[in-house]
Image 1 (cartoon, rainbow, N blue to C red):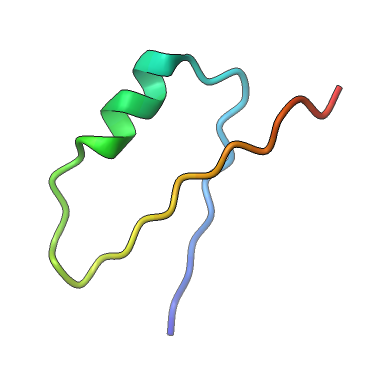
Image 2 (image 1 turned 30 degrees about the vertical axis):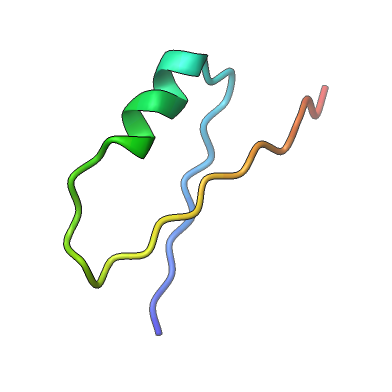
Length: 39
């Protein structure tokens, strides 16, 4: 199994909406999590 994490700093609601609308291959699993402020 291969995994990759992308850390997006200061994401806007439009950023999250765009990520959720990506057209990906059926075998690609995407999980979007909000980690809250780390500052």
